[in-house]
Length: 162
Image (cartoon, rainbow, N blue to C red; front, side, top):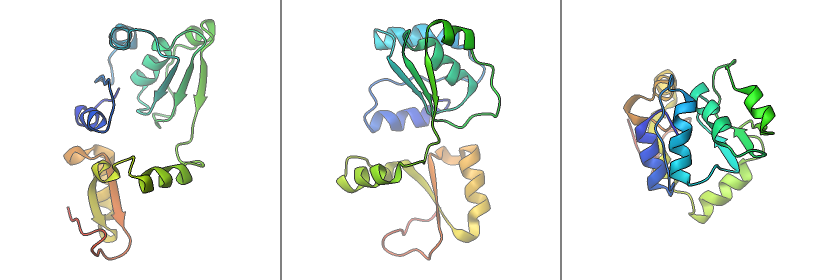
């Protein structure tokens, strides 16, 4: 799931078999039936990489009883979540700080060619355009997925300009 169709399109290109577009104020209770229909059965593990309240709520409602919800996306500091629902169905909710201990595995995936990171990096900025880079990343301008700030002058390894 995501809030931006372009991101879901990229996910499909990179191997996702199912995607679902959400809105920030869409009721998870309504969307959960779409998830169940698409997946045929409730997932054992739901990984919320979006972090929007609607996405986190959906992960809790859609996950099978006794399953696990992993919250990776960094959403607002406080959310209204269906805690009683999660407790009654014995859903384990786990928080993950995205980058902790992931660099080694990520570098191995990139080096092996199993992940096409070039498709994920949609925008490049020189160090002097850092504010513009952060604005682009925050607002998703121009279909931004990942925004790269180059701290060294570009060469043949990183020649792209925005």
